Amino acid sequence: MSKRASAKPGRPQDEPLRITGIKTHFLRGGASLLRLQTDQGLEGWCNEVTEDMARLLLEPPLHQLLIGADAMEREKLWHQLLHWERYRWLPRGLRGVVDTALWDLAGKHLGQPVWRLLGAYRDRVPGYKTQGGTFGPEGDALDHYLKYALQARSEGYLGAKDHCYKGAKFMAGLAREMRAAVGPDFHLMHDAVQTYDVSDAIKIGRVLEQYDYQWFEEPIRDQDYLGLKQVAAALDIRVIAGEYFPFQLHAYSQLIAIAEVDGIKPSDPVSGGITDLLKLAHLAESFGKQVHIPKGSLWGFAGLNVNGGVQNCPVMECHRPLEQDRQPFIRNPLQLEDGCVRMPSGPGLGIDLDWDIIENLTEKVI
Image (tube, rainbow, N blue to C red):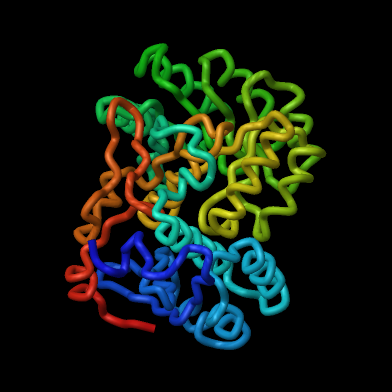
């Protein structure tokens, strides 16, 4: 393993771990990689960085905030970044990629996987596959959705979630055909992406209950707390909401307390990184609710680590599918084994990168 990923610092672990440099690689094919560099030779990584984000990290106030800071003071930096997110209208997700890289650094500094630092609830998590949205004519055919679910089952996933926007009548027929096609033991979920009104959401929710769907995601607008409360109260199926909040953490307490949904769906790194996800998981747990955390950034390693550290995330969304995250520079891509994804064993977020390949693919460094 390269020095960049070394887990054994040359100085005591109680000394400050000072951030000394910020670089972002932009690779052929569209991938990016943020590198937070430190005075101990360790680096923290995250992807999903835009060129605008990379430039902002080298300008005031973020550059002054991060350079020289102790990378282990994640909570302090999280609050400072949250402050500047509002005052400087920072791009959605910038705070999250920095926070994720800080957690990667913390694990490497301490020689532990992040999922262990978060609590080590489990060493593997069940995975399900999500179908991307279909806006063309093929989305008008039931077979389009059935084939996807059957393929997910054949690939070993625990379940499949559709993104069907064709209305309550179409979805009612699809739910019936879907359950008949995959059988009783395969998990099915419906994500409406906020396309129903309250009345139709309740109607289709009752159909989903009839065909033993696991949950009903984003039935109506996330911001319609009172409408969501009506839907959740009328249905036995779990109602999941909250993927589309522009500034996420503080809105979730209202979503749970007022709308009384059964679970929340933050996204990583948009939610503010691993610190946000951990706070949200504990918030949901205090209300007896679920949190649904996708595999997320750093080609799935970030969200996977959070899934390993919390109790109330029942399954992990694999969207994009695991096979699409197998980049040539990742030596240990995530694998599905018996319907589950195993936690990484390496320090930090556990991703093992081939830097010769990354440097060869690098088109620009900011």
